[in-house]
Length: 134
Ligand code: ZN
Image 1: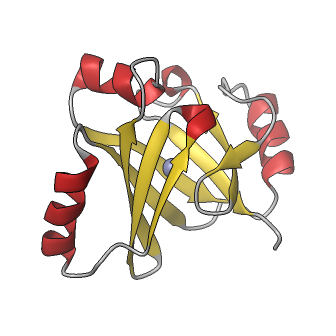
Image 2: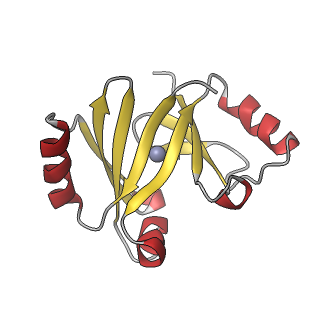
């Protein structure tokens, strides 16, 4: 795996959190995006090579809504960039990791993504991602 591409933070109210993080990081967000299939709305900040992704739920069945209910606001996942997502999925499966997504799917910010189950990674939700070819 390569660098930490981004850190995902679950928030209840995206608008006020975007304001807060703009102040905190002293930069404006560069992108906001709804991923309707995932029930999430995201806003991204670029801090050097790594991004901060704020995530809020767009409906009650959203995985983010469930996370907020169970754990409250806070770090939701860590995303690592990989050179070949499909190969990495196969490698991790072979190593015995549990994957939430056996095949890559479309994520926000022009990425193909897959999540590992936190049960097999010390309670941390890990995302692996690869930039989609344009
Ligand atoms: Zn992410």
